[in-house]
Structure formats: C-alpha cells, structure tokens
Length: 449
Image (cartoon, rainbow, N blue to C red; front, side):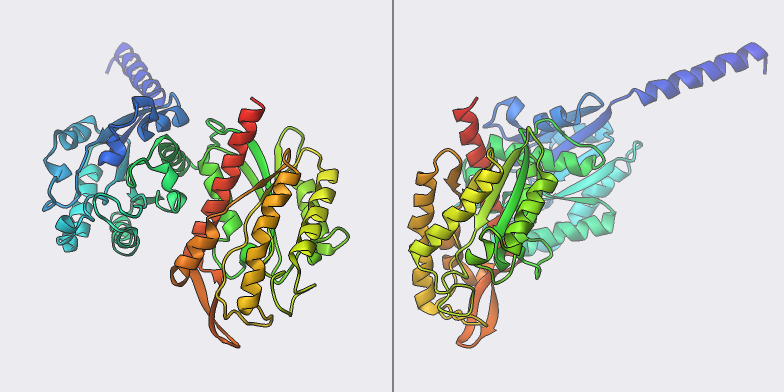
C-alpha cells in the first residue's frame, strides 16, 4: 500500500467519523391517532413539541396513524400501513411506540391473548434494523368517562398497561409512563380520549426527559417555582411509595414548570400545630429559606382541616369554623410577612367515611364540621385576593364517590373506615393539586403579563 493511498484512506475515515458526530439522531414517533392527532395544528402535536425540546441534534418524525392497533387481528392493524414500511425504511435511532388504546376496544380486545406476542414481534422488527435503535414503549394515556371508543380506564390500568410492561421486559425496551401524568386531567383532552395542546405538551416533556434524562429542559419551562406543601398525614404520606406532593411536583414539571418542593406534612397535625412559634411552623420556614431565591415564585400549598374536624383526639379538637379561620389567617399572615412575594393555594380537605375512628374520633359529626370549613377557605381567598386563592375543589366529591377505589381501607374502632389515599388516590390528589397551582400561575401571568 502506497504512502499516498494510506494518507487518503485515513482522511476519508476521519471525514466519515466527523460527519457522523454531527449527524442528527432520528426519532420516530409511532402510534395511533393520539400521535397523529389530526385535530391539532402541526406545531401542537406531541412530536413537533418534542422536536423543539430535543433541539437541533435530533430529527423527529410523526408516524402516527388514526385508529391503528398493535393487534394483527385488530380492525386496523398498523402492520398493514405504509407508515410501518416508511418508518422501517427510515432506519431511526430512537423509536417511541404509543399503542394500545384502540386495541382495548371491545371488538379488538377479544384477541388480547395475542397482544404481547404481536407487540414483541413489532419491537423486534425495529431491533433488527441496521441502526439498532433504542426502543421506548409507552403506557397508553388514560381514557375518561363516556368516551366514544368505548374503553374504560380501568381496563387500560388493569389489562393493557401490565401487558405493555411485559413487552418491555421481554424486549429489553424502556417504558415511558404517559398514563400517570394525565390521570384525572379531563381538561387535557378534547374529546375524552385525544390530548389537546396541554396534553401534548405533557406527553412531549415526559418523553423528552425519559429519552435524554441527563439534560435539563428549560424550554418550555414557564417559571421556577418553589412549592411548600403544608398538611397532615394525607400530605406526609410516609406509607406510600410516591406521596401526593411528589406526584404534584412531577406533574407541574411535565406542565413546563421548573419545580423544587418540600413536603411539610405531619401526621395528626391541625392548624393549632402549625401556628407561628411551633416546631411545625419552623419546619415550613426552614424549607422555604433553603429553597427560595429571589426571582423564583414561592407557593405555600396548604391542606389542613381533617384533624381539626375531629370530635376529639387531636390538638385543639374540635376546631370550630371560626377558630379554623382564625388559625389559618394567622398562619398565612406570618408566612406572608416573612415572604412578602409568596402566594398561597388553599386546598380543600378530602372526604372521609363517617365511621372514621382511629386514635382520634371523627365520625359523622367530624365530617359535618369538615364541610363547614369549605366556605371558610373561600372566604380566606376573598379576604386576601392578591396572594391567596382556592385550590382543588373537586377532590372531596371524587374521593366520596370513589372511596373504595382511591382510599385505603383501615380497621378502626367503628369498623372499616376510609381516610387515607392509596397510591392510585395519591396520583389523583397530586394531579389535582398540580392542576390548581398551574391554573393559579396562569391567572397571575394574565394579571401581570
């Protein structure tokens, strides 16, 4: 081999090496109408938002097709479409697969025993490509009541999601959970199934953070917010893997906020326990001092009242509506004095069963007293309109109507009672808190553009 030929070969190899370094990573978004989303403008669809988040180092393409199923025996298998041929021919580096919603339709789900087999074969068809792409399989979005499919979300949770998890395990693919961030958020879909622009923004941000976890995504983060969650055992929730504050923070992040949070919930505590001068109040101010920096938005999310409503067994119980109002106003006043720019979101206390009786006595008398705090919370917001707002108002009825689904059964002195959210309930509650905080931030922005 001549010297000139060796030099030429080395230069050629270096050229291709540097060319490859500068190449974009190709991201294929494979799915059904939730991915295609023909009702939205091109820039509002999740693949387009994902493109903006990931930036110039990536090329994101939308390979969604309405009504498509993973099941080969489904009414409209993705396998038969030109999109499937096109995405394989593109030889992507990353494949995001969001399927399963149409498979869950009654006429398709009769073939559910084939779902894992077909899905594994589908994933393997991408793994066999020359580029050996990274594969991500997504849990389907939640469906909402009276949807047109019709598919109940309990079927998604109990039958589809476990099968997607099995597919991920069998194919060594990575799971992206698109279900949890949208649970309880009917206002994030436009027809009980398909995400609107708020829903697609959540999808894109969750996918971006999963596919490139080492990066921060300041865009489209709206603001830097520090949230201090004040409450009782429902807030503290040490019995859960994920607490409502942790879930709320995650949801706020998926909505585009850069979030720091502190869980200052303490089991059994009332408004008396959080008055200025107490250890609980100091815990709150210590958390705020540690996190809050000038230019950020400090929010105190307060959910107190459950233990105040007790007949006996908690500090100050029973706490009258008048005393509850006085204590809440005192807590707010002192925190506002210490942090003049802080905002307060007052979350409504949750329903509990009228036989609730553990180390403290609640019962129907306590539940009636708890209801009497609701107008007090609204009055506190009206008295302090520039920095206090009412937060979640839906949770009470949601948990009352679905207590066996969202609350943990506990043995008590008056039979099995329901007071504390289970993990599913925590996801609902965290989502409600996040939604109320996000809505308040939007209102503030409109008032001070």
